[in-house]
Image (tube, rainbow, N blue to C red):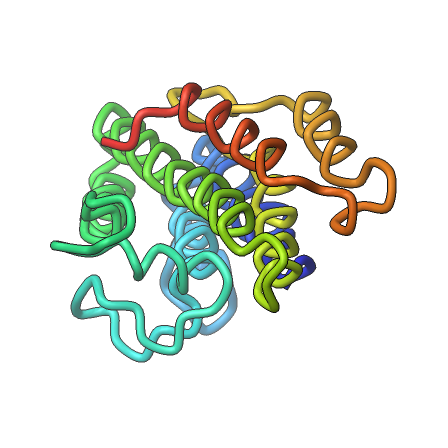
Length: 212
């Protein structure tokens, strides 16, 4: 659980927020970028970002993410009427990816920038929401069989916070995340954690981000 949730940030979120969607200044004219295909380099990079969220989905025709793994799996939980954040981030990210892709085709930089910001913000808030949620779940599960499972999930999501990007900046810097992880790892790690420590960290996250 810990390793998988670390990959949500270090692999998926990083590649979307800090790699492929930051390289939209590449060629968008040559449609022979890849042998046997008809897409430009910019279209290719944009589609790479899409793949880190939707790569295992069996249909691109709607926002529902079937066979979701890592970031896509958790984005899929935030749909209309969900009991998680209460925000339909799934539809918003799907719509933003579509609009952004059309903006790439149309060479409309202003619209592309707008949609990339929406993608960054929504995906980042999904990760932040689950970080605070698993921290509080672990606190509630203290001294039960579920405690170490929830702590492991929380640790991985907290680690992933350093790759969030809200309006161009991470919610928590690398050094801030390292401090949070040191708190979770202090002493004998999970065996020494108490509910107040977990709840305080969840509160810090909730005070940093607005889930809207």
